[in-house]
Amino acid sequence: MSPGVLDSSSGADGNSAASMAMPAPSGLDLGILGLGTEYPPFQIPPDDLETLARRFHPDSPALSKVLMINQYTGIESRSAIGNIDHPLANSLDPPDIDKLSDFFLQEGVALSVKAARKAIAEWGGSVEEITHVVSTTCTNSANPGFDHYVISELGVPSSVEKVLLHGVGCSGGLAALRTAANLALGSSFQRKPARILIIACEISSLLVRSELDSIAKDQTTRIGVTLFSDCASAMVLGNGFGNKKLSEEVVYDLLGWKHAIIPDTRADLGFDVHPLGWKVVLTPRVPALASESIRPIFDDLLDSLPELHLAPSKKPALDTTTQNSASNGITNGTHTNGTTNGHSNGTHKSPHLASSLLPSDFDWALHPGGSSIITGVEKSLSLTTDHLRASYEIYMQHGNSSSATVISVMDHLRKSPGTREHVVACAFGPGIAVEMAVLKRRDLRGKTRNVEAAGEVDADGLPIVPLD
Image (cartoon, rainbow, N blue to C red):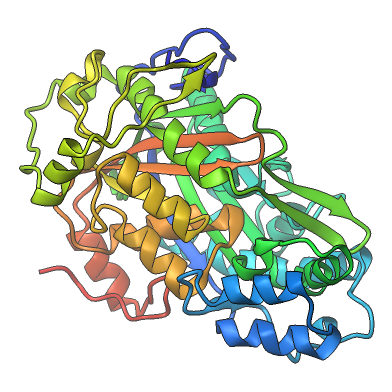
């Protein structure tokens, strides 16, 4: 295991391990059978934040700084459940957590139902066949959870086994996938079918008043108000058992996964509960922490997947940008007690099983936490914008929708023509926790044509065009 990263789980054994990464067995026979993304109808451009801020707060150094940062996030618009004239965004005082919860259980549940129906429709199964539901959110803490209402609206039998994850923030989408995968393997061990619905939903836009209030009163630079948006996304994960297996089409094979904690970063990334909702915690260290930690975690995960190294490599030649980056000595090290783990930039060949595989051999579904996080990872792994195209596009067009975003990126990526067979999905959450998974694309031609014939649109609301 790489120094400086506390390994919590790797592969599919489901056991916690702080000292070694356990390999995932080959042939898991787990596949993502359907995905669905639902963004709300309103798009909020950067200038709208300033318009709203000026309605309620006088100019101040902290507010001016945040509004300046807002113009340079790289986000063209953010998806939101309402526009800046929404009543909850324009009350005399910021809405309290009770009003926010009621709104989430109305609008967030409706958004989640739409996303789930898209994923179920692509899978082709019925709600009666769903064996488990794994959900996540960090913008609601109702009991029973929002998943209870989504399941009821979908008509999923109340006897379904369900899990609701909280406290995992932006890493929630992949944490839910990891949880679902371990549940599916438990069913496989019992030789039972598993068809697991995964749901992530976040309504962040109406926290804007609370965040602006803190900026004005405390004179603190809180950039979360410039980044976050609303979205629900869903997946259906299946194992290798069941009568319908032969008729199901797999979008992505799930080959393995890893969860890790970056030590001494608990205060750097979080989402604190508050009478006026939740307050984003995001320190300036986060982009560097993300880019420095990702390579050793990637190497450890690939070491747990020896079957990846048995297939002939089809790596493209390094482009001149990658070669120049290597010659300039860009490093990517996790430092512990003044030492480095010895990993260099993305052209480094790991001394482990992953000796012939580079980050650039994969497409990347990276959670777009912010432009500096995406560009930092791109530089540290010697990737190109093409490797991260889906992350950039979702970020620019919709913003950061916390846990729901990485599933949206995966959904968008599989509709984007590409030559790389394997995909690495990665997200960072409070802790700082890192979630990573390796996926294998299936042939999308038939699936894409079927979806387009049904009049489906992609995560951006654009008609799906069949691949030639």
